[in-house]
Image 1 (cartoon, rainbow, N blue to C red):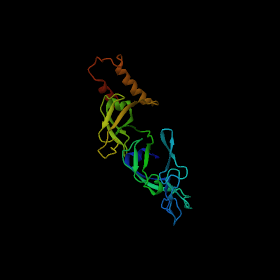
Image 2 (spheres, rainbow, N blue to C red):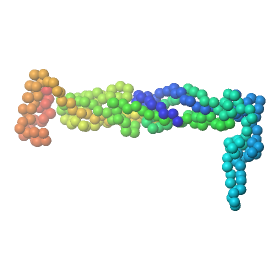
Image 3 (tube, one colour):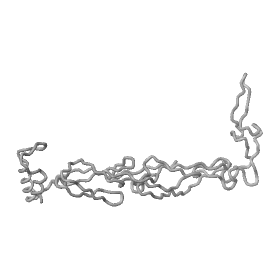
Length: 255
């Protein structure tokens, strides 16, 4: 197992990453036998190659691992100098891992035959690369859907307009209808995360948040005072008596 941390952009677009792992590989000098070149392991004389020694204890026949060959059934009289009789040597190996687009944290990639080498020249196991994706301050992922937030001037919410929302590659324009309330969510089809199996993309869900200016000029304050005067005496949630709609009044004052 190898834990690999990648960026959000790498998980969205796919990438290749080079990793270096320590692992045991079959000794090339003795081909994994553990015996020096020109010699061969011999059958253990204690267990006769069984790897176990059986003995009688009352009515039962017991078995224990042979201490002479440590259960292998073979004895190496002249160990290989390279691996010291283990049949394996530890090496560092560089591997290129192909990361598919759309992969998420916790998913793993299987690299066949890139695990630890088998004992006595046996086949190597597999390497599992477990992916961890770094957080992105713009998005929250839900399956293949992405959630983000877009700040909008309160006048744009009232009058309607267009706002720019972040995208994986380029920003997206979101049309805001007049009279939109803060917290409204807009869905952009197919603008989310690609499916890791290659079956389309998720959606981008943009939640708009109204922003109130904290520093106003004299003219801006005057315009807002005019607007506030059109709301009196009714307050939020109350019905106005005149025929002219609220958003029509906003349009008249702010242009």
